[in-house]
Image (tube, rainbow, N blue to C red; front, top):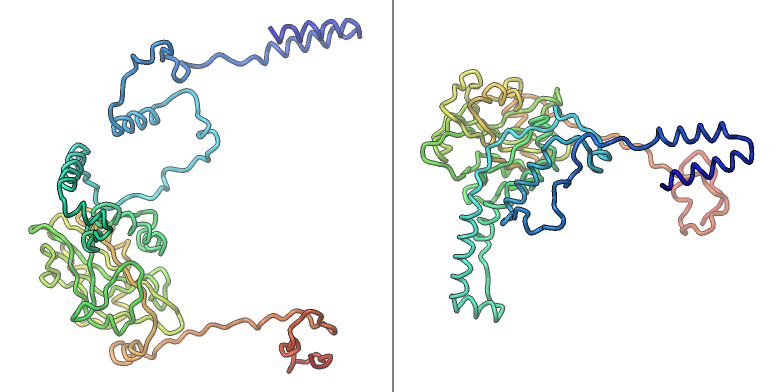
Length: 386
């Protein structure tokens, strides 16, 4: 109706100004610009607003999430605002999860366990008294065990992404470390490997003690590699340790494919990453093609590529655990190059650019007292002492 009133008014004005033809064209264009009919039913068109009580109830948050995901994945003729604004991504190049699947217990079991623990805590008078007096303490081991079962794998994944581990070892792929890997160096396990902490090559001179939770009849593969250490090809790695067909968590009973060798970060190259990877095997794996002589101090033979190793055995092994540390040069690296590798130690130096000084001012107002010290000894003349 509003459009009709506008058209009639334009016709009247056009008659007065003798431009009836233009008004007719405007009326025709206004009719053609009307919105086209929808190609299908509008969203929520089948909801009876007068009788909302008749709608199906979700009854649980899990049921709501399932229905929401199903509705979101359903093909419709219209687009949401988010679909219009967000850029389209090529799904062929999204990172692929190559790790173990997550077997989460049913929500009903979790709710029952939570209710049981809550009732048990309410009936515990000692716990109530300690909480009221603020003397209650939770052991850190208990907190860590709960963290490892819940948010720990995802936190480790984010740390690995921050340090670029997936990007260098598994391009366009990642995994969530579902199995907690505990690595400790030294007889008294004083040097622990966490997720990016610093250890010196002297501390990691001998093979570490590795432990993890595993079933009795399961098989595992343990790998220690460094993506930053290769002297000739930045795309290659050096394998420091490889043990396959590990029964359960007995690492010492596995097949040592490559003997352990201590880290040797070269001087002047900063911190290097040393990554422990734990793979779960489906069956016994034939590592004859990867076997190295023992001892092996040839850097050429120790050249390694984690991605190629995984592609070779990807049908039989699955990444499950992760731990890594960083290391920098110390005096033990010089001894390793001299005695083990029988070669001169490579030393890298950083050529620092000369310090930039702005042009000298004859009257440097507002400058410190020793302003001209930065210009003394040069070819330019200094204009006095300040």
